[in-house]
Length: 331
Image (spheres, rainbow, N blue to C red):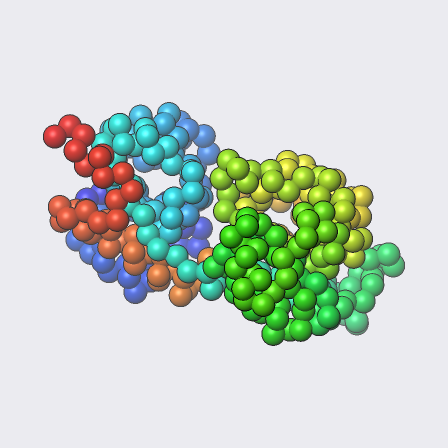
C-alpha cells in the first residue's frame, strides 16, 4: 500500500522499533502540517492509507471527497471528532482505532504542576544569564515559589489520567478535590478523596486545578470566564487535555485580570502554536508544545497498534475498524 504518516514533526516514527511492521509498503513521512484544504488534498491524493498522529490533522468531508485513492485511516489512539466518520463511511474509507495509555500525560501534568509551582523554568533561564535566584527581573513577578503539601489539588474528571494525577497529589500530601460527572465524583469518594460540594466551590478552593475531560460537544467551552474569576489570585490552572475545554478567550482575559494567577498549558486551539500567540507573551504562563503523549514509550505503543492495523488491512484481515460498514461499500 501507499501509506502516508502525517505531522511527524520530529521525524520520530522511522526510528521506532515498530516501524518495521510497514516493511514492504511504500511509506512517506510528512514532518510538517499542510495549511488549507487544497494543499492537503494535493498532498494526500496519491495515498491509500493515512496514519494520523492523534488530532494533528482534521479530515472533514470536503477533504475526504478529494482523496479518491484513500481506503484506510489508521488512528493512533482513539478518534476524537477530527474525522468525519459518516463521510468516510459513505466513501468506503475504513477507520481503524488504536490504543493509548494515561501514564505519559499524567506524568507531564505533574511535571508542569511542580515546575510552575517552584518557578523552575524562569529560575533556570535566568541562571544561564548569570542572574542568581531570581524568577523575574520585574519585581511584581519575582515572588517565591511554593510547595504542594497541604494545598488543594482540584481535578475535573476522575478518569484514567485524573486518577493517576490524584495519586501523585496524595503522595505529595495534597488535599484532593474532584468535580465532574456523578460517576467521577462517586469513584473519587470511593477511593478516599473528596468530591466538591458545588462547581463554584471547586473553583474557589483550588490551589492547583487540572482539567482531564474528553473534548466533545458537551464539554467544548465548559470552563467559563465566570468559573475562572472564582479562582484564587495565586492559583494555578493546568490544562494537558484540550484547549477547547475553556471558553474562547476566557483564559487570556482571566490571567490578565489576575484570577487565576498562573497557567501551565500543553494544549492550544491552534497547533503548532504561532510564536506571536498572546499566551506565549504572558510571563505567568508555562507553555509546552503538546508533549502529553510525545515520548518514546507512548510512541511505540500508539504506532505499533496503528501500524498493525495497516498491515492487517493490507493483508485483507482488517482489525479494530470503527466503521465496519465502510468495508462493504462498493462491493
